[in-house]
Image (cartoon, rainbow, N blue to C red):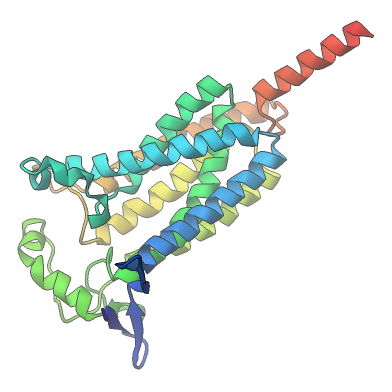
Length: 316
């Protein structure tokens, strides 16, 4: 199956051939197709996990406990991402409930995934006696790695693009044109004017660059300016929220609050950024005036080590 399309950019001569298929082969008589989207998402996830494992080692967090967080967090992140999407696209699923389970057809929302994954992580931290806020700091940096890399899967699929633009990096392909032509009525309902023959904003690229840059910013804060547990995750919420609130306004595939012209992710992102900014200011002032040493050590593990040492001293 030939799935290659020519992608053109306003500022470049010629085109770039892009395929959504990485490999195809037969296995036990069955045709297997591996798509770039899944491979790129998996690669981003793997790097995020490896980074999280490295930070867990440095912060003396039990890797056994981290594995529990990874397993349950991943499962509920997928569930959350799917439910979030289906709730705001309920008209598509209310008469075909079994379609909700067809995640291979697309329809996963990043915010739903974050909510589901964090909720599961909170429960695991309570059960396994882990420092939830230290974990969130690690998650914030890891998420930026996964999102920054994973967004390139959208390029392979030629999806998650924005409105028309004349900027040099504006892109066009037959897939983009076909999508625009088949959704003109939907665009009109949402007050969006589109020309299928013009280039569009590569919004996935904007988010990828912002997330990768954000990772280095948060890592620098972690190394030089971390004052309290949870600070890095609040920085993540502010950094990502600002970007998504802006870029979501350019997207053509946004989920909308039913009966309103407001985009779900745009409203949520703006609210998230504002809340995180306020908390960062308040808590940074608090911990600057009353500094407390933080070394990233899981406090439950630290308590256990202190108790063990006290018992050893008592037996001497």
